[in-house]
Image 1 (cartoon, rainbow, N blue to C red):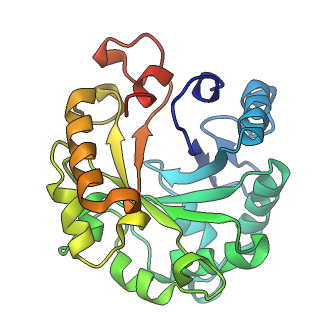
Image 2 (image 1 turned 90 degrees about the vertical axis):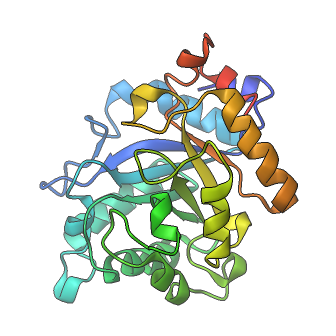
Length: 265
């Protein structure tokens, strides 16, 4: 990961994905291994070095693997289940991450993300970054997507006067791929802003390699055109770009190193 800060990429945030809450509360995994497994020694060493350069590092929770959120929210009346939450809290604390990205790709009630956002804010403080990863359509007028709840309603009620913009969610890493959105033009992003979200809280999530998703990948030149248009419209308020995923970024653009994809973006 270090080339991201050793070269002029303008990286601001790095997401470690994905953290999974498994049926055994003590068996949290980062991908397929315990976060404390020696397989991650290099990752954690480089994470500290990247943070020292001013880049914020967040852990992404959930994703395509089912089960994390139903388990976390299996407490009384759908509240937080301490048996699952405490190991998560300890993991985040131990590894000194700067925030989390709630990637909910399974059906849950709106009370689940709301309770998690409140609890994480309470336990980690207002400087701890709280982001979410909806598919694009979930923030557009239709509201249709993977999570099974209304992000518009969640955003309306998930507030805290001590946090930026008074919102519990700092920003959304929006997935514009796999049929849920299209990053080849600025239209889909603009429809989210027209639906009431501030551009500063909407990050354009794109595939940086077609192998990382089912559909929706475009080459760097196409993304650059979309970004140029959005920057012209929203200026410094534009919420930036997030690429999924890093290890093979740019390979289909004939780039030899992943950081070389991040730099032109």
